[in-house]
Image 1 (cartoon, rainbow over the protein chains, first blue to last red):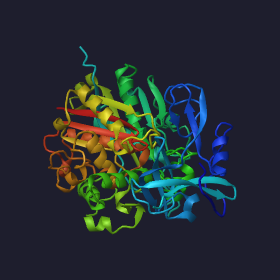
Image 2 (image 1 turned 90 degrees about the vertical axis):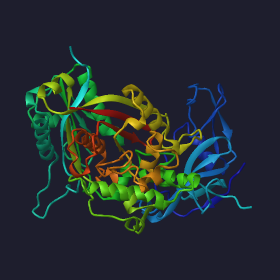
Image 3 (image 1 turned 120 degrees about the vertical axis):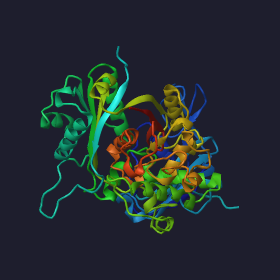
Length: 138
Length: 398
């Protein structure tokens, strides 16, 4: 499943680091696909992707595609933030429960209410991608 | 025959306020000078001498404190040889509780008869947006949370939003916690914020992390505390009133800010588990407590931890602040010091103020904020979004 890509001016305020292991995740985000790792032994997915399954500590994991859809569990609007985010204030962040049974935290681009359906979108900055959630209309 | 119990025998605390930075005269407060006075004051309060102290457990100072390796520097500054342990402890908001626990363990293990649990937190010389550049990295995954702009208290704000959603509560309900705590702080001479405050005052403040405004989140402050921890045999010999550690519990849920497996985020499982363990160890239930001093940086956090510890029914914590249940004179007074919102929140020493408050209450030294016949008190601290909790049950010994 491919997610919408929104071209976003400027650079990311606080760019995430990337390891050899997490590079497939960020490369995927850049092209609109969300992936994570699932344990070959216990079959449970993780987020963020990890080389060791946090549940059974197996080191046999496989990349899987995520639907990029879920529900908004909670959210807040930040009015006082760290110096690097000053130009974004105020901004909304939230917690999303993905359909695959994973909880993530990200930006929220609109006023979607709690427990309503959201999709992940790619924010394509000049220096690389981030992702965010927005409500699914209809 | 020894009792094998560990006691808090004395303490001293600096009024919370803004101390860091240059004065008009070009001078400044130096951390070691401030702390030195408290050490002397705390030992006098305990009725002990310098030579009695065998361990000095300090909270790690903020990075803004110029003097590094502060613990060993203080051992030098006080010329205090120790045959137990001298060390600094770090655990973010739980730092002071871990410091306290380490001092208790020192005595329990027999490494020393008397240990100091102490620390100083100076940070107000650094503006909040700069300070948050560091604190945001301690309260989120640097690569998968921080890039989106989460701040330490944004997680608590999301607790509030979820709580209001699930329990048909409101910002106004939650804000009564701030009003209640201010009423307590008005009678606490070491509290940072002591002016009278109404619900309207709270609601009129500018938003910080919605729905929470300026008076529903902690102000920043500098502070310092020294507690004297001793073997009960030493405490008994002094002939002074003291407090025993009767129960303790710790739990880390194995998650940082959020659980990747969706859970009930506002159940505060760590506080439930640590509280149950501490109360079981003490052989008591929540109804036996006379007061509780909980680590609650925002209004919502006090509500959730009170519910997790069984001090208030789930969904009723906010309303019980409004009804007076958690006020001094009420069913179970919470944060008689004024809590983090009004007593103040010099984060790396905040919980030492909590133990100090319960020590004062259990020794009958709460003055105008004294809880009548207080015999059993609880202290609860946390880290993250209550992903871990540490609970102590303290008991008065006349």
